[in-house]
Image (cartoon, rainbow, N blue to C red; front, side):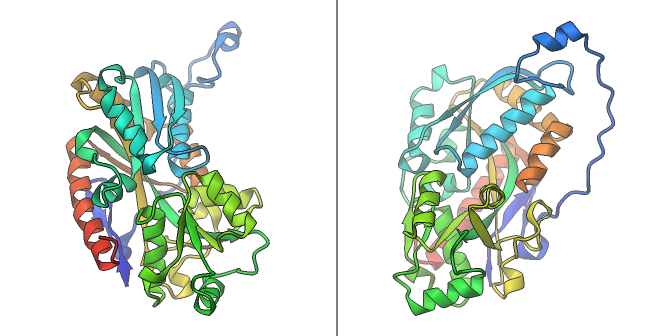
Length: 351
């Protein structure tokens, strides 16, 4: 059995007890009666605000990958919830692909003094890529703000693919290992590669033999899948849901403990006899030297976000798990994950 632990609040979550979906939230709150003239003057970024006063005037989100990826969706979804709820006045977004996420990290570090209004989204790859030496920095070189959500991983195939299940994929792989490539939006040895390897190992295959082809952005990986360059794609479940709803892919396996309400047609790996589960955290980082008052402001806005209906709408449609750790708790988690992921990568031959 292959197992990766993640955190839920302040504790690690294992295969035996993954984060369960929260009960349907009931939000009963008074809203101000806003005059018609005020409504007309409202900006697009703050429709039907549920919070009277913003915690932060503006946030610029730095996204280390291209449009359509998991980082992109997390940053834009968070910005949407913060602005629509009124917790943030405005939100802007900047995609900065390159170096497996290293370009954006380097930019934030090198321009720290001018980036106090910036939050960079990241996730498990910031741990994986520092372990493998893809870039010279690690999470300790940044200001840790908060972990916010978890996203399961998924294996998808093109809509017209003859593959309809993990059994079909495994049969194709056994028949032609080198001709059955799996792609992903991360570098070799990165998270999408690691997930594909975990799944294949749990299915009884040699994980080091999997032919993995990396792509720098979700859109490029999707084009490769539809063209037949790869047989399957390892990606985040929220990304997979968007692609499946658009009729572009079939989700043949998700790394959840049980089927996820956001897309119940997606079978789990476990129900197909592949005993592995995984959930990828995502969260936010600031530039090194970010003033403590600014850090506290960002943490307050993100903490309050969970209690808004605007956030629940974003979370539910993406199939995310609510995970929240701030400051020192976030740091402790990352150090624990660094050891656990490192041990797993050594086992799989990536380190």
